[in-house]
Image (cartoon, rainbow, N blue to C red; front, side, top):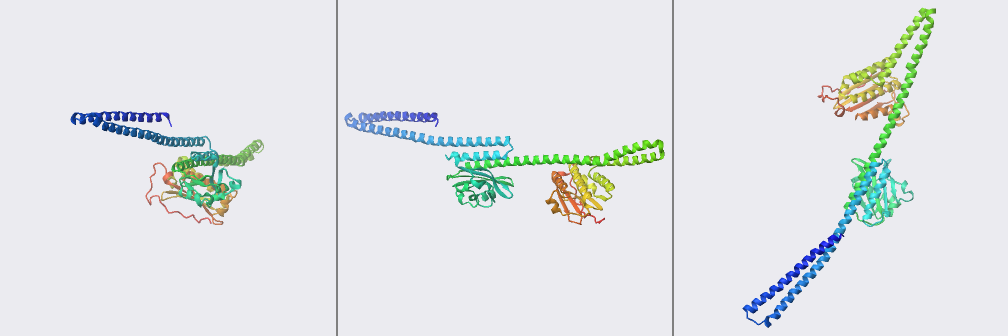
Length: 507
């Protein structure tokens, strides 16, 4: 305890002692005065008769003073002891709180300095060991593990004092302290971990007398649990439980950051691969189309030049063939430019752009293609129209390549605050289960891309197909987040149409 507190107590007691002594002196003087006044002046009694009585009264007063001084001395000792205990307890609690704050700050610093969840988990176990330090239990007695879900099982990814094959074991997280903590989303303490139906699977926890389970949860997403135990029976108070919960919250933040980073890295890699694939596809198209045509044009022009003097009529025919080939090449190049950047989409909107795309595909492939409800596309925002166009283009390309269809229909409609686009073909169809199971089969990567694009505009994609019945790709986009600026919700019946059924024409 601080010496200044002892000095303050001693000074206070000393003042009380002086006050008692002064009070005693005044009482004795007052007693003498009273005796003299009563017996000598008014009673006219000789001094020898009342002096013994005065001496007894003074002795009694002195005795009371001694008792009072003794009581003050004892009170000073008790006060110092109580203050020592109280201040010592407060200091210990203050130091413990300061250590907790410092540990949480270090954990937060680790969290901000690294995207490695493993490092943060190790720091979490270090912070939890503070609770043992505060109880005078060595940190070495801590047994701990952080469990994360893997294939619907909890596996320990960070461990302290795990034995043998403990690191390879998994639990379901449905029973015992772990199950209770995950179900209630709160810290659960058990004083009998060796009998816990799931913790006893681990040799390390079978040697513990107390264990605490901290759920790792963010809102409605459950990541796993952190379990710490000790081979000494301890009683954790609310402050310790709050510390454990704070550590669990920090660990969840680290896990979310790590997941976001992994998702960003995966998305970055996917975009790089998609860009590279687009470049390769463009190079193939240029090589197989315009490049070959331009080479043919150059050869035919050279042939026509040699024939001008020898056979002008044949040279004229060759020049006409060159003109036809040049027009075809120009059309191919315009088609590639339209695919790379459809300016009509930016200037005239989704309906016109899709209609132009259908006409171009129909002319080149000889397939009947038509658009129904194209004007409804204007309800979407510009960014949503761009994504929707890309999804429709991908669906059309899949249908052109694989469906063997004679008719492809694109339909737009609006219903109950949703924009719906459907691409239907009357082709051979396919088994959607097989395609989703095996990404190497027909068009499945294209469907993955379409689903990812739909998620970017808060939409959803559904693919319906069975062999020999055709295919329908349906995109649903919520208008509450993707409506065009200035558009207001329509009244029922204004632009609301019943969901159309795909046409049977051409089957």
